[in-house]
Image 1: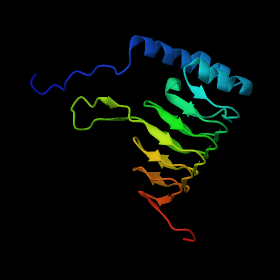
Image 2: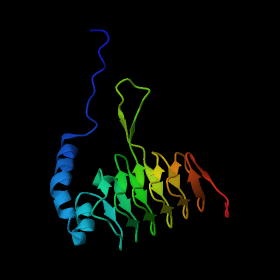
Image 3: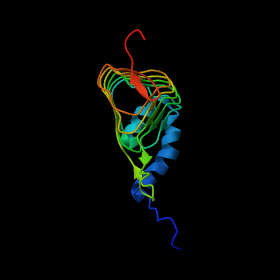
Image 4: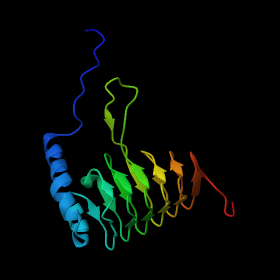
Amino acid sequence: MANEPPARRSAWTSRQKFIRLLWGTIGRVAWCIPALRSPVLRMFGGTVGRGCILPRRVELTIPWNITLGDRVVIEERAILYSLGPITIGSDVVIEVRAHLCAGSHDMRDTRFPLTRPPITIGDHCHIGIDAYIAPEVVLGDGCRVMHRASVYSSHPGSATLSGNPAKPIEAGE
């Protein structure tokens, strides 16, 4: 048939599929014990600095793509959709329901292959409640993303971002 969609193949190796299965079962069970969260994330290939706070209800898709600096605080129900690398600096707060999305699909290709662009969050950043950080975004040190903002482009340090799409705002606005 001439109009059949092109064949798709998995973006994951057999080894990665197996590790993801272990993460979704054994890793999730161990995650229920607060003292085991950082060690379990490290065991599955993630990098976790000192003094990080990881809640019970957080979505970490691919643990080996997560790098956390020191004293990172992630609040409940945050989503770190780490199909690609997510690097978070030190002294960062990621609020409730914030969504960091390091994965998408190439819509120009009829097979819609998976893309895994990175996200980088600098030191001393604050990602507000229900904020969205898109693939390929780099936020410099000291950025503040206001609640419900959607960030689709990179911003230098000390920017305060608001809106959808997020734009820098001036102090006092």
